[in-house]
Length: 185
Image (cartoon, rainbow, N blue to C red; front, side, top):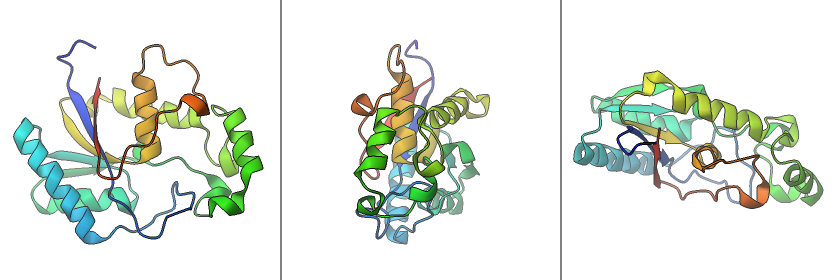
């Protein structure tokens, strides 16, 4: 990466309602519309200040797409891309972590890259779709993205020099709700 390569500016969606203690992947949970609008205002202000195009790409999940819909109301181009979705936790998705239990989570951590939690999607599959999105020429130039914690962690893992196989112990920590990460391409 040469420092002149355009960056993707990726924001994590605003905090959804009623998710504390739950495994949330592709479960479509709501965010207070004021929080989505507030994040859209922050993205719009950031884009103005940095000369970024008025283009936002989001996942189709409401907690992400609602921000894009606000920006579209203000004249932005909003695209939905399924590759931005959170990890699919299969049968775990939407359940309380304490209902899932420690043994299945430990099994996932032991085989972090290839294990499909709840029969859903493996981290390897998440990394593949994350890499495909980042490399996609449709995102040429600096674009704004609204995504999810797991996807952003996958992107950060891919940006590490010689990232190697992902391991649970060294997986990047989740960024905060509404936080922005810049990914050079």
